[in-house]
Length: 54
Image 1 (spheres, helix red, strand yellow):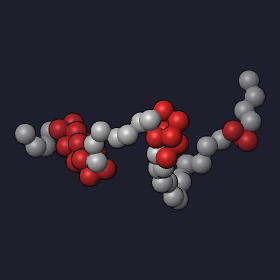
Image 2 (cartoon, rainbow, N blue to C red; image 1 turned 90 degrees about the horizontal axis):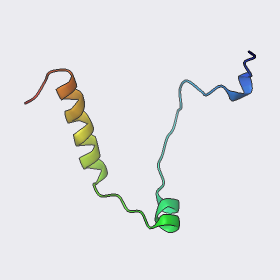
Image 3 (cartoon, rainbow, N blue to C red; image 1 turned 180 degrees about the vertical axis):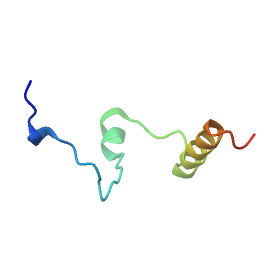
Image 4 (tube, one colour; image 1 turned 180 degrees about the horizontal axis):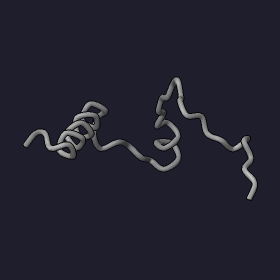
């Protein structure tokens, strides 16, 4: 087996930004929840996984 470093992924990405323009244009997709709702759900899931919240 040979590993090619050209295909390594960076371990840290300094800047990430989503753009749903193409999804809207190409397949007519629109998000069903807001970004704030998504963050809330993710935090609640993490809290539940660690035994916090009810």
